[in-house]
Image (cartoon, rainbow, N blue to C red; front, top):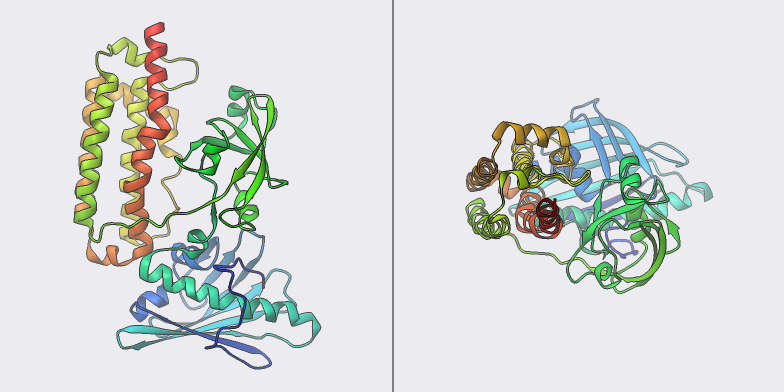
Length: 420
């Protein structure tokens, strides 16, 4: 067993017991037994506290597959499935000396749930020594993370890891040609965060990071390399700006843990005020723009109208993302790249035609988002790992999407149109 650590804690938890084939751990969580049980069956929630990718078929005999960024994985089937009471599943781990299993019981106590986890089938002798050490050190920190995710929606693996402060954009053959990068694999930056070490190091939009702390990286592997460092460390970063190779020293900061509104209604009101400010800034930027200027395209860059369509598509996709949360289906960590599909944006521009109509549709989509947030049921708000996703998207991603990702692009499109 070789799972990523939620903290640097190495010692065996005082509430664990062991014998020749089983290690047992306990964790009390302030959540109902049904929600604690769900943490071992729901693919998104499993990913939020235990692993980096998960697939489940939550029923007796159904599959469970867990994968970590360091390459370790474990698979099996649910052998016991008693909702809110008990669950068990096989643990056939990569490169382990034998097949093991995990069993978990859930007991309500004083309004909370005592989660008792047993990792079974651990052998003895030298060939099992590494597995036993990993099980002893990993489960206490992972169960601590389970508690944090269920109670606050905060993944300690994220809260405690170093922050690079970069926005990652699509990097494919077309982008390679467009920006003149001499490499096909790496991390293309969409920008850097305010106050981050990346910005202080001088990294910019469309830079392509290829090495981090001496290791070759891309968008998939960066996390596994970065987790070996802590906030405050300084590491060398090699990147390309166009065809020019550069090196910078990047100081890693810590991730802030922002507060989120306690209710959907409060979140909706904050979102409404944010939209008012963003729309005012947008209208000022677009003041006096003609229809032909709003239609103008500079090379492969979006026109002003396509940029407005992109913002509207992002609203629609956010709403669908929240709908999946309400349906309790597995979701990704963001709305993916669907608002970036050029064919979709051109269709929206053709449908609405004028800049005024596109802006009105954007405002209508924003109003629908606000109404959706105000209507979120308490049951979803109580599922902190989902509600916090939606809240942080509205509080952090949306303002940054307008101001940091697209405001400069919008001004450049306007300047190019007026020059033409």
